[in-house]
Amino acid sequence: MAMELMKMPQLGESVTEGTISKWLVKPGDHVTKYDPLAEVMTDKVNAEVPSSFTGIIKELKADENQTLAVGEVICSIEVETAKTDNDNVGQAVSHGEENVEAPVTRDVQPVIEPSRKARFSPAVLKLSQEHGIDLSKVKGTGNEGRITRKDLLKLIESGNLPEADDLSAISDSVQEEITTPPVNRQTSAGTNVTTATGDKEIPVTGIRKAIASNMLKSKHEIPHAWTMVEVDASNMVKLRDNLKSDFKQKEGYNLTYFAFFVKAIAQALTEFPELNSMWAGDKIIQKKEINISIAVATEDALFVPVIKNADEKSIKGIAREIQELASKVKAGKLKAEDMQGGTFTVNNTGSFGSVQSMGIINYPQAAILQVETIVKRPVVINEMIAVRDMVNLCLSLDHRVLDGLVCGRFLARVKEIIEKISKDNTSIY
Image (tube, rainbow, N blue to C red):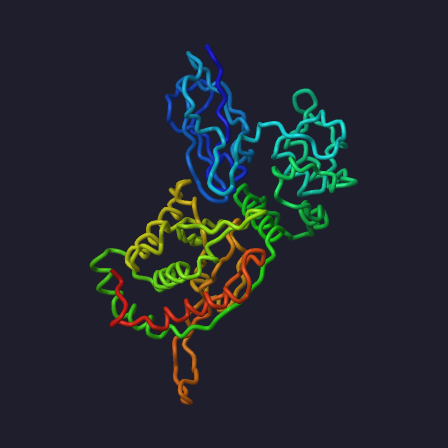
């Protein structure tokens, strides 16, 4: 008999950890290859983790609601023969720009110790950098005294953190593993926040922690700038309102304003590919495919599924994908592949009544565009006052990749496309 280990898979781009939301097996259960073992939740997707082996579940290495880094062992399986294939979905894999080449169980050289005999997992290194912890001053409880992620989490919760004396001593090889810069440890740990009588303490879920981590990474690494244009969407509103009833009856789903905006933005991206780019340290990668990420909110989380090749789709095709992706999110059926490959994000903040907002860029993309509420208000046209359907388009940009000139031209083009929409020159099919 042989013992095989199932590990936490990487379930999306830039995903570094996942939370076991529900075990679907227990010790002693017999499973066959590809049987689901557990439901895992990340900031990007809810998914089932299938077994890579046929055998008996020996031990569950994590509790429900426990968060593990990509590559950490989640359970062990006793099999009759050793593994004969490389199709181990429990291993971390490379996904596009993120270029994660191995699971976090790969050893990495230490951050500060000159002897370089100690070894730390990327999950430990990431936490140490986020909270400014000197790992040479931490006593590990793992095998042979190794520092584990749980060791650091206990320190963070206690607020008694050994601070690093010289974080600039991090080697180049380690910096490749760590992309999140140190942050104020009191802010991260919340040690300066006290609970008063009557206050309600709400535990932070794994998905909320993951969202917070990604947002922090974006704000710390990306120098955000912001700009906005005002658009007269009256013709678009009139066309959509005239078509929506027949469209719903014929197609079975809604023709939304948002579909028109996504189509216009995708068209403008073909003319201004600079905005369809990503920062890669020593180079800027301009993406060929235009894959629009759209933000879809649930009661307690935010997901960002992707409309692939949006520039090649009609308004009808985009409307259908918006409907399908939103339905998957609400049903908890969004798959990892639904979240991957996004190159530019469009957020429909107008659905909440917002009229002006500054979005946080969806790392590692270079920009995010917020489509605000369409509001009827008086405007001056040819020295006459008229009531028009007006909307603000707000763009947050990575100032390492983009400058105001190209972003201004891009927004002007989106504005032009929307304002020229009419029944005579716009087809939804």
